[in-house]
Image 1 (tube, one colour):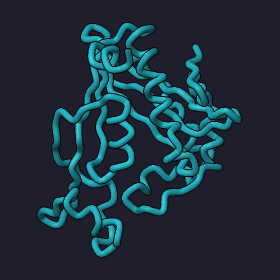
Image 2 (spheres, helix red, strand yellow):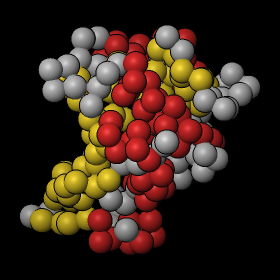
Image 3 (cartoon, helix red, strand yellow):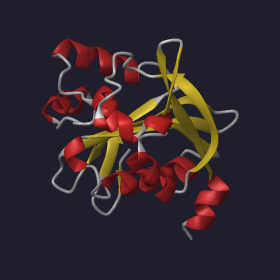
Image 4 (cartoon, helix red, strand yellow):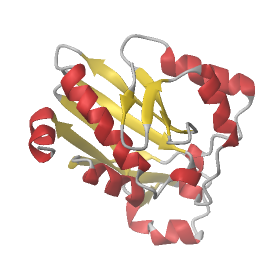
Length: 197
């Protein structure tokens, strides 16, 4: 299976692709430190790969650019064939964000998801502070359908950090715990096909 866009190619993820994440750039924004993958050891990458590819209700893919460089991965999990729905996720090398690759990869994958896989609905979850990602999802046709609070991954975040202060409205601090708002977004086949005619 291979999905082609103008500049990108999407194929099922392989372990060798996962290892090349160690060459990726790093996010300077501490709110995105969770996506800094170069710090993983070979053993952690192997475990990460096993976790992503084990089981029948998820599928993960590599995204390559026009130079055949591995610039991101994407996947669907919680695949529910009877309801024809799944939950989407995408992570890119910070060196390749803000270049249109993400939107191109998502749209190419949505064609495959709805037409080849015969699925009907795709959901995703994204932190409210991750405005760049939200913009990319909206360009691809996703709409916000719910908002809720979730415990933030870094409970030791510096509350005086400029990145945190800029996105303060995305957070709630309660009983000494840090929570952040999550948007649940959705796109369905009918909407996608209508908007991409």
